[in-house]
Image 1 (cartoon, helix red, strand yellow):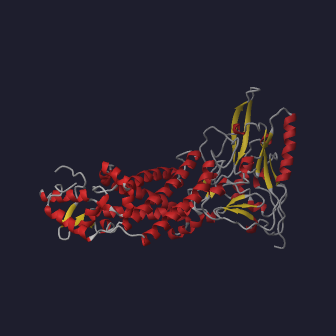
Image 2 (spheres, rainbow over the protein chains, first blue to last red):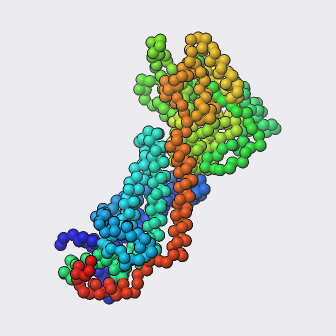
Image 3 (cartoon, each protein chain N blue to C red):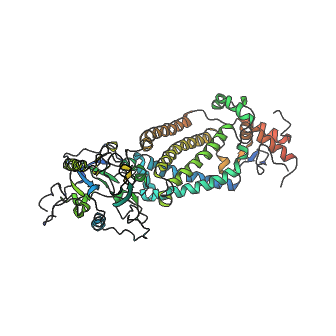
Amino acid sequence: MPRPLYAEPGDRIESVKPVTVSRYRGFIRANHWITALSLILLLVSGLAFFHPSLYFLTGLFGGGQNARWLHPIIGVVLFVSFMVMFIQLWRLNLPTGDDRKWLSQIGDVVKGNEENLPELGKYNAGQKFIFWGMTILIVVLIVTGVMIWEQFFGELVSIPTRRWAVLSHSLAAVAIILVFILHVYAAFWTRGTLRAMTRGTVTGGWAYRHHRKWLRELAGRRTRGPAE
Amino acid sequence: MSETAPQPKTAAANPPVQPIGSNLLPSDVVRISATKDVPQPDRQLTKVAKLIDVSKCIGCKACQSACIEWNDTRPEVEENVGVYENPHDLTPNMFTLMRFTEWVNPETDNLEWLIRKDGCMHCEDPGCLKACPAPGAIVQYSNGIVDFIHENCIGCGYCVTGCPFDIPRISKVDHKSYKCTLCSDRVAVGQGPACAKACPTQAIVFGTKEDMIAHAEERIEDLKSRGYANAGIYDPAGVGGTHVIYVLHHADKPSIYDGLPDEPRISPVVEGWKGVTKTAGLAVMGVAAVGAAIHGIFARANKVAEHEEHEAEKLVQSGDGNGGTV
């Protein structure tokens, strides 16, 4: 079977009455939550080093010394788990012509007038922005993070380079926190989204409203004979 | 302990015979890392300085030995690789280091053996303290001494990033940062630093900063009379002056002394990181988080309508997803 255009090979319609659609399998969900938990722990410990008024957050890790050695190790966990997710998701996050149209009507997006928007595949331009934003920032953070990882890489780069690394690391951290807030906000605001990452399925109406091309493709595939 | 120690004016004084109270108190602190609005002390200690006259140094390393002995450190025994530096660099156990440079003076074609005692400069505007994220891990006393308070140190290495002189070293054993304390524990009881006390040629002397500047000027005059036209003092203004100062016979080019920075200052990158990035970054993140939370609670959510569920059913049951209007 050729690779679908708008869906992952594993996406499928799970039931018809009412329609539920499988969006994320168990592995990717578990991995997503590893990434999410790592990001939150990194955010909390990182903010403690970022601003003195938040230093008390190191208490959650059992003090500054513990937060200091844990932070980069969690960073590696996040990097690995995110890379696995990247390999699974990047293809459908490539930009398409529909994204431009969707973005040009961002006013309708914000107002929730989705009937005016083009039909979309599995991801809209906003989701793609979060995906690529996270990807780029995580790469910047892991590279600069290793450069300032005193415990194991204290001698890796010169001190002037290290100054740029620590500045870039903090700027990228601020940026990724903003992307993270946008991600969480959008997942709550667009009702019915969270279950895609908890139960793994969405309702047919959700798919119809937000990702109709994706739903159409899955419906077409279903009639052409079961894949499994 | 009947009385407190006097403020030391020389390293030559003998230690007191009777127990004596410390004269360098927590209340004498003027700056604390990661801490705003430090209460200003009600007394101002006399500013102190250690003067290192490189023209009088014979490279005997008595200062290193005294430092090791007083601070009870155990620098590792290293391999001899054919140079005089021993150990090869500052370490968490070696707070001061004689650095040796063989320099050919282009004007005279003479080989000059330049020896500099490296270690913390005790900046008036300390980059380590500015960079440090751990409240209370680095303090500056009103006499100018910059000291690391190890129980608060988290070993992140930010002080290394902040220091314009490449001084702090992080221990691989306890993951805390170490450097010269200017023997704050000796100064507290009226004694000068161990290195100055041990120096056989008085290339290292200690006293009030005023006295040390005056002494340096005498030395410079002497050096000039001996043909060192560029002799001068190294008390770099870029870091607000330092409490370890040098007399250099070639003060016009400090970097020939094994890379002593010509114009040290806290890097603008560090200033940008600890200045606008920290303040603006926190503000932007705070506004975004609070804004998203409020908007999330009060704004109309993007909900799936009932008819869309029916449409989906129709679409799926028609079985021809690709046939509908696109």
